[in-house]
Length: 364
Ligand SMILES: NC(=O)c1ccc[n+]([C@@H]2O[C@H](COP(=O)([O-])OP(=O)(O)OC[C@H]3O[C@@H](n4cnc5c(N)ncnc54)[C@H](O)[C@@H]3O)[C@@H](O)[C@H]2O)c1
Image (cartoon, rainbow, N blue to C red):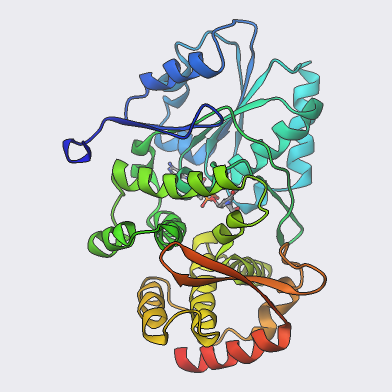
């Protein structure tokens, strides 16, 4: 079937499913199925300005045949979106419009916008419907899926958030054509993580064969999304398996906060890729996976996302102390045992620091 190049995919059951289609008309059908066609269901669209610049007709493309009244707020994408102030500003605007619980919020943008919209939709009047139209690779295969959202607390990543599922997610791959190369690469970091979470090597091999500079095809998007959906369906509130989706993220978030705090912007994906490299090394050190195997994965990621030789453990330690996965003062670190096999280890800072020193010596 896949060799015949499918035109569309539906992933998941009727609870927050993902649709992938290159036909924007399919969006209206999906909208009618999940939201209905009541004229009185007003829609509050949050639109990433960069997306609109590259696709000026975007609102017509998706909403021309949606019968609702549309209110549009344009915002500039990026980490700075994920603040209390923005969430509060949106709630104020919804209040001023006398928006009630029949309203639907829509995010058209990357992962920062879907995090902000998901969070705000979850708190306004204790929850109104939301729909995601992800426009970056990161948002298509990861951020818009699975019902987690987050705001940053100052420089600290994702400290405030809720679990709140969108009505549906509509992935329209042509959006990727206008995405900056570095942002495409950023999305590939999470795609690589999904490839490691896949129980077979197929997605990993495909990434290796194709490289990460090219646009993923629909099947690759679908495969990566399925990996996340499957885990989320098994464990929506992160009691166990869902933790594995955080592979590389404890270090990644801390590294991202460190660089952003010191004015050197790096993408979320670059930070996660760095975090995964150290997590792979740690997995081998703890004898969860053979050193040669871990090296192979790490080398590939390092080639695409070079780990900075001069990054010291103490640089990102202050941010690591705020990792959401810390329990009773111990760091819960996700480690790799093989394709689709992960584990959670409780480790103290001393162990992490000693291992990091060995890791960075290897990089140098
Ligand atoms: N909630 C979750 O489960 C989850 C999972 C993974 C990542 N995230 C979050 O997602 C965020 C990163 O998402 P992101 O990488 O999409 O960042 P982003 O939203 O900042 O988008 C990256 C940049 O690309 C621009 N852009 C987006 N789509 C475009 C398009 N089609 N054409 C041109 N420009 C476009 C944006 O304006 C922005 O400048 C992080 O804050 C991360 O914490 C959340």
